Length: 250
Image 1 (cartoon, rainbow, N blue to C red):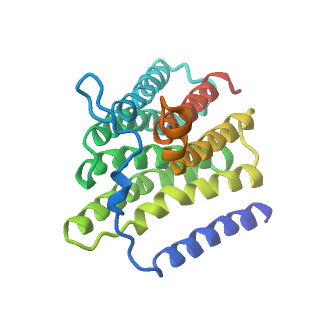
Image 2: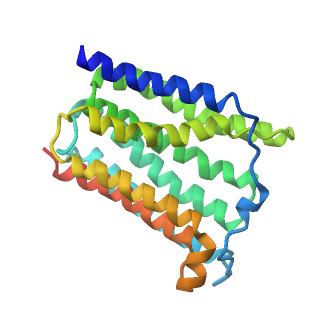
């Protein structure tokens, strides 16, 4: 009964959030989003540090793929290996997609930044559902969530092309898991030890979003790196924490 109540709580939050987001006006992409603080061209590469700071995603993505492929992810559940692999494939693609976007930032290249992010988000969320709630439920959600994530980005791009951009579905896909994951950690017990790793992912991702908010301010203070470049580094660190979790948990 307790488990039922917890699941009902999560379901209610999903329903309420969906109703709220689709009862507000469509959200178009703000053109100023592409005007990052650090636009230096170095060695012929535009927005050099915003591009270069995506390299850790590529490295960690490869590390994670090799870990899963070599069957050494002893800190995860055997039933969820496909979700772990998909997460690191998404991480690898984030590195390339985000670097491409930051080299030539506009709405068209932003598509290739956001698509792999939804793949990584949905794979991670499904894996956490499997670790904390039910592997069967995780598998029921996994493919539909991947499709939902991809469709949300494609829908935004199509609406932008047609002159009435709508980010609402993408916003739901990006931010609802960020709300639900801490609740799942609080309400449920994992089949694995080491909750600290998952909390570490949540914390690092939260810091990355703060860095993004203070892009120009941090750039003026630090000089070398902007808030957006730091966002990439903290978000990549979150993926590294998950890699550590899959090596060290039991």
